[in-house]
Image (cartoon, rainbow, N blue to C red; front, side, top):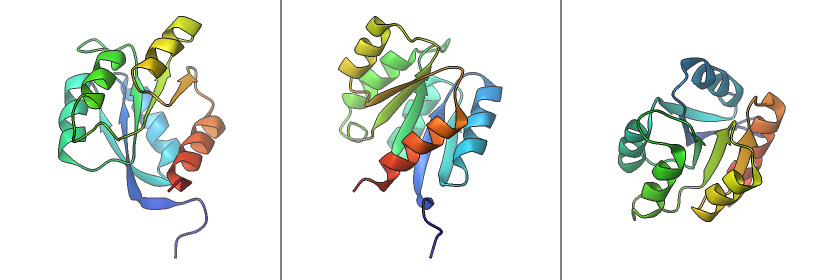
Amino acid sequence: MEPSGQHPEQRVLVVDDEPTNLRILSEILRPICRISAATGGRDALELARSQPFRLILLDVNMPDMNGFDVCRKLKSDGRTRDIPVIFISAVTTPEGRAEGLALGGIDFIGKPINPAEVQSRVKALLEQP
């Protein structure tokens, strides 16, 4: 039996074009779930369509395809529409947050990230049925 708060069978996709951010987020979340990483929107879409994920943490500002466009594509695809998306971004304006939520994101975490906040939010979501 796993210690309380760990969900190793649940996979989380972390998407960010900055390798340092991917490393940090992976280290924060590795104790509570299985992590896959993508460095861009196109890679994220390919992974999300080919593997079951419980959650996607998605950066907004990426060079190949921004996170809002990725979310739009995820939510329009029957294979991925039910995967919850949490945006992680320096975009913290009310308009930016509203746009992300309107596209189907369930939460917004601002950068720089607070490790305890990220872990708590992800853990709470993974514990939901």
